Image 1 (cartoon, rainbow, N blue to C red):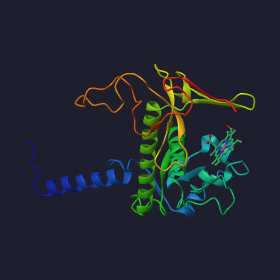
Image 2 (cartoon, helix red, strand yellow):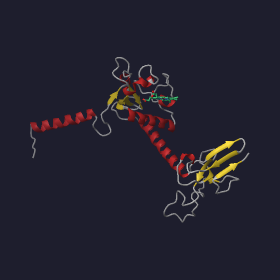
Image 3 (cartoon, protein in one colour):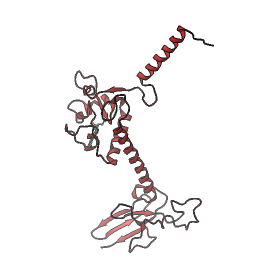
Image 4 (tube, protein in one colour):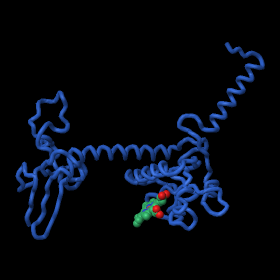
Length: 264
Ligand code: HEM
């Protein structure tokens, strides 16, 4: 058994404390894996010019080494405005003026926040993460600010809404549509309509969505249980989703027709 007493104990404790400190400094703890903290002025030196220490950019406070994409970001390159700073807003707006190259992402919509998320994934995948910028998105101790948490919450909500929309699209794939001055309009379903590959075709119906001004045409399954059928639901009528309350038939189109034509 190892026994530490007197000076040995103090030495042991000192070694342990040093190890903890080293681990902290190296950022080996949990989510704070090795990263540097930058102040904006320091980051500004990383523009990839002669004598600069490197070529970095930041997005939502996260700093990436983009030197392998030098041709995009070096001085005078098309996207040089992103170098040496956090210009998160311009990733959405495409405004590369000095007024546009800012990190203020307030007022952006859910889908614009998702654009930022897509860019973040892009940099995570293609470049090396080197640190965080102290300021709008990270505090001096390197932890997220309430503003970043709000952005992240919007991104999470946006991703969830997208997932929900995708599920809805599988259930009610959009119809094919065409219009010609000679024949009028035609709506029809196929196994690929709306870009949704499936083993059923369905029939056109108007889908009324809460908040939408106009209904839009979707293809509806005509056999089997309704999509929201549960094992303990009453027996179904083998009509697929035809009886869904948000659906309406097209006037002048037979209820089980795959194609609805509306001559002029
Ligand atoms: C909000 C608008 C836009 C933003 C924020 C943006 C941003 C960027 C960034 C950061 C890169 C470099 C990616 C890398 O590191 O590899 C890039 C590359 C590129 N962008 Fe854009 N871009 C925008 C719009 C456009 C548009 C409208 C076009 C075309 C009309 C375009 C064409 C390209 C092309 C062709 C490349 C690749 C160039 C190459 O590989 O040499 N971008 N873009």
